Every structure is written in C-alpha cells, then in structure tokens.
Image (cartoon, rainbow, N blue to C red; front, side):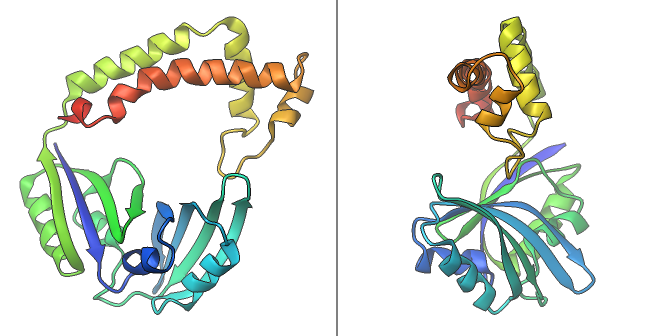
Length: 232
C-alpha cells in the first residue's frame, strides 16, 4: 500500500481561479461524483464575507452549470455550496481521475491559493504512476510525498485517542454522546447548543463547558496525527 500526497493547479477549473477574486477563501471538497455527463460537487468554504457574490461567481464560471448556497454561518463566515458542472476532457474532475486509477482519497481535498491538495492511497506504484500521468494532463502537479503508510505510528495514535475517550468523565461522555446523536457536529449542524441544553438537566453554559473539555481532551490526542512530523 502506498500513500500519495500531491497538489494540482487544475487548468480551467474553478479551484484554479477562485483566489484571484476571493483571496481569503479556503475551500474543502466534501464530495464529488459524476451523474451522467454532469459532475456534482459539495464544498465547504471559509472566510466567505459575501456568500451571494461567491455563489454568483461560481455560477458564472465556464465549467459550472449551477451553484446553490446550501447553508451559510454568518458568525463563522462559512458557506456550504452545491455545484454542478459539465467538464470536458481537459477539465475533468480530479476525483474521477483518481478513482478510475484505483487511488482512493484518505481525507477531503482542500483548495488554497489556486491549488487542490490531495492525499490518496493506492495498492501499487503502477497505479500511482498512471494516475500521476493522467493528472498531469489536467494541469500542473507537484508531488509532496510518496511512501508506505506508517501503520504502527497510526495505531499508536489511535490508541492514544481511545485512551483520551476513556479519560472522559461519565458526564462528559453523556453530553458529548448526545451532541453527536443530535447532529451538533454535522455539517450543517442539525441542532444548536441551546437545543442540547433543553435535553439536559444543566444550563447552556454548563453543557458548552462539558463539550469544550471533552473536545480538548480528544483533540490533544488527535493532534500528533495531523502534524507533518507524525507522517514523516
């Protein structure tokens, strides 16, 4: 098994040009798939000060047929946008290229400064080479790493995460579990903090404090898995 991490400046795609008009926006491609001749994509964009202008720009892009604002959090300046586009052979979605070469994303792709950042796993060098060749026909590709995943280190990290969960107090587990069940961590959120408090015996401030303490314990255990050093 190989882990292939790369960046691509996708020629003719909205990802290549978005930061020219909206320099501060960063986007995550949550999913992308082809439906007939149309590619459907859901993105989460942050630092979106004017969601209407952003969606209008996407709608007018040459490869897009429609763009719809699904949800916008004004406080966080975060927008969820659904896109539909008719790509030709020169602007084919990156995910299509990866999947047909049996390269499977391990995390959602991010878009920043005109580049799409991807991390995928594949079973052989031949598949990675073929995917890289096909991707190079879509734009400029920069390889960041090609390596065998360090499973021992990943398992160690997962053990630490499990221990962090076990270290939660019974009350923290109760509140966190309810928050997950009620969709507090969904995108977009299915419930608000005040709604969680209505299901609990404590007030909103106390429920929020239980969640913050739980999140802090778990995220501290997760952090080593996010750093470059942990993947070196």
